[in-house]
Each structure stands twice: as C-alpha cells, then as structure tokens.
Amino acid sequence: DMGKLAHYEAVLDKFFTGQKLTGLCQYNCNVFEHDCLCRSLTAHNAILFDETVALNNPYHGSAAAEMKHPFEQLLVTLQ
Image (cartoon, rainbow, N blue to C red; front, side, top):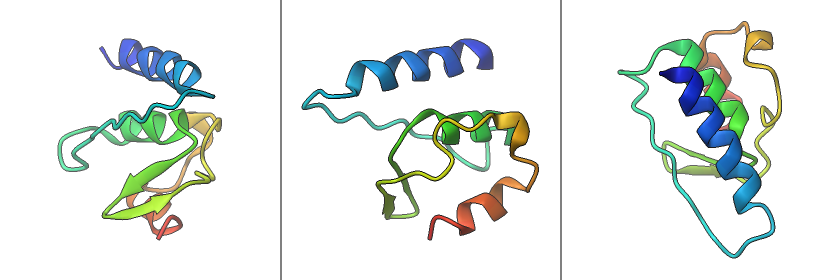
C-alpha cells in the first residue's frame, strides 16, 4: 500500500530530525511507479541518487501532485 509507505516515510523523517541517526530508504527506479517515486522524493530533506548526495533536496516537502515532469527529469536536477 503506497499510501501507508508514504505515511511511514513522513513519520520517519520527523523522527530522524535532530537525531544523530541516519536512515536509507532504497527504491529501484525500474520497479516502482512514477507516483510512488515522486512521493518518496518529497519525503526526505537529503537524498542519495546514483552515488550523488543532495543534502538539500529541492523537492522535500513538495506535493507529489505538483511534480508533473517525468521522474527521470526530476532526478537530472539533483546531479
């Protein structure tokens, strides 16, 4: 259930804020649907994609519905 997954990630993001903890959510871009990947991209303030770390995720807190570009194009902005 992707709705439950999105909720779980939002709760984790709040829990990790201010803590000396690091978590890593992993998504296979060839398996998950665009909508799910967009939701996961908005859930965290830092992301790692293709061995590139974006500590200031520009999509953090955005509404997934606002992300109208193809997921692959969104990732290009992070490189």
